[in-house]
Length: 92
Image (tube, rainbow, N blue to C red; front, side, top):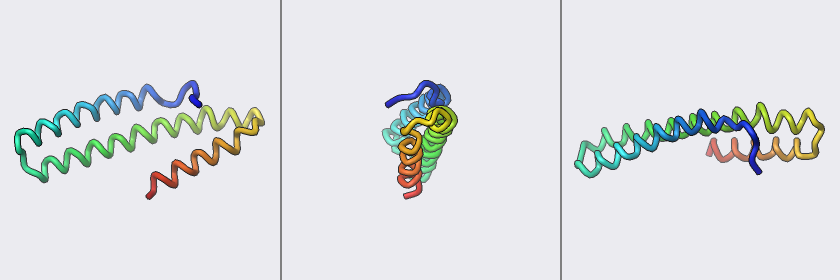
């Protein structure tokens, strides 16, 4: 189920940047560049993916979860559990 404003715009900008980074990483591999330099770029892309995920979750908490709780919907508890499940996956 989607929600109206889940920080998708900020996340999309970061993901477009990651897409460019991945294209660059592939080019580095094709050019047989130094492995440590490739690894550094991969780590950079991974960090940006994590930031994009935080953008989405932050907005989700501030909109969808908040609204569900304030409106007294039964879904409030379900939405809280969804976030807990995501956090659990994130820290593993």
